[in-house]
Image 1 (cartoon, rainbow, N blue to C red):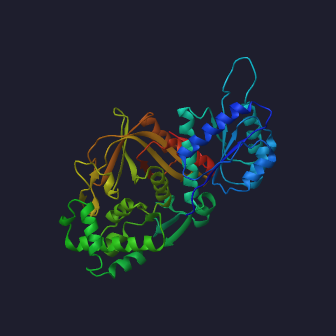
Image 2 (tube, rainbow, N blue to C red):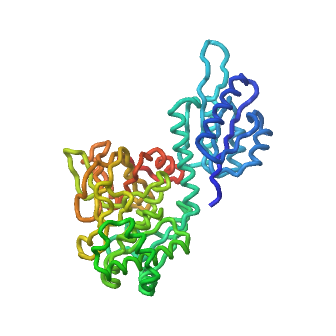
Image 3 (spheres, rainbow, N blue to C red):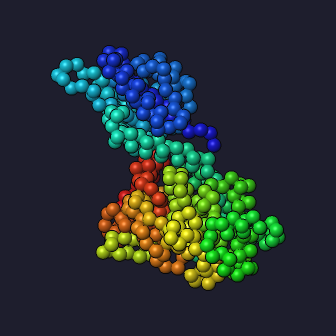
Length: 446
C-alpha cells in the first residue's frame, strides 16, 4: 500500500492581518506534523488562487486539511473540490485577539463560505474542527479525522477472505464482492472451506512442526489435547497461514461448524485465534462484516479485537457480557490465566481457546451491519472491559457500558442489529464516527 498523505491547504486573502495569520500558519503546520508522517505543507500561505493551484499541482493527498488562515471566498474551495475527491477536513481558526480593533483573520466567515460550497458538491457529512492549534480539543479532533482517513485508505488495499458459506440462519454475515468494493473499496476473495481442509490433510508431521511449536508457545494446555487433534489443528494452522500469505489477506471470516467437526474432526477455533494474534482479523461463522469490523478496530488500536455474541445482561453492574466458542487472540487473555486451551462447549472436541479477556479502561463495541433495507450502518457503544474471569466455556469479556446497558440491549435488539460484535480495546468512537461519515454509512450510537 502506498503511503498515507495529508495536504495542509491554508487559504486566505492578503487584506487581513498577515502577521497574525503567519503565526497561526506556523503553529498549525507544527501541530499537523506531530499527527502524521507524510504531510505536504506549502512554503507560504496560499493567499491567491494562483498560489493555491500551484501548490495543489504538487500533491496527491488522501486527506486535505482545508484551513481558512483568513477569510477566503468560495472560489478557493471550488478549486480544491474540482481537483480532488479525497476527504476534506475544514479547520476554522479562532480570532487571536478581540480588543475592539481590527478583525485580524475572519476565519469563521470563510468557513461558512467553504462549507456552503463543499455541501453543494458532496453528500457525506462535513468533517469540521474549530479552534486554535494549541487547544487539546483541536488536536484530538484533528487526530481522529486523520486516523479515520488513514483507515479509509487502508480499506481500499484490503483483501478480505470468506472461507466457506455462512451456516443456515447466519446469512447476516454473508457479503457480496461488488457491495464490499463499492462501499469500502475492499476486495473480497472467496474460497471453499473444503479447499483449506484438503490442504491441511496433505501436510506431513514434519511440515507442521513449526506451526505446532508456535502454537505451544502461545497457548497453555495444548499438550493436553489428544495428539490427533493437536496435529490436525497444526495442519489447519499451516493451511490458513499459507493461504493468508499467498493472497495477502488482512482479514478473514471462516465457516466453522459443522464442517470442521464432521469433515475434518478438529475445530478451526484456535486457528482463528492464531490469525488474530498474527494481525489478520479473523471471525467465525463466516461473518465477513464481523471480520471487517475487527479489522477496522485493529487498524486503529494496533491490537486484536474480540469477536463475540452479547449473551448476558447485568442491570445492577450495568454490564453486557460478550462471548464466543473460543477464537479470541491469545494476547487478549488475562495475565493470571494466560491463553488456556480446552474443548468446544457443544462438540467437546479441541483445541479451542478458554479464557476471560484482560481488563481495559476504555473499549468500543462496534459492528458494521445492515438495516432492514439492506443499507450499511454502524453500531457504536463506549465502555470499559472489567477485570472478570471467564464467564462461560469459551472466551468472554464483560463490558461496563457508559450508557444504560439495559437500554442498549433493548434498543439494539429492536433496531434489528446482528448478533455478532467486535469489542475494540481502545476509545476509538470519534475515529469510527468520522470513518462512517466518510463512507456515507449511518452511525447508530448507543
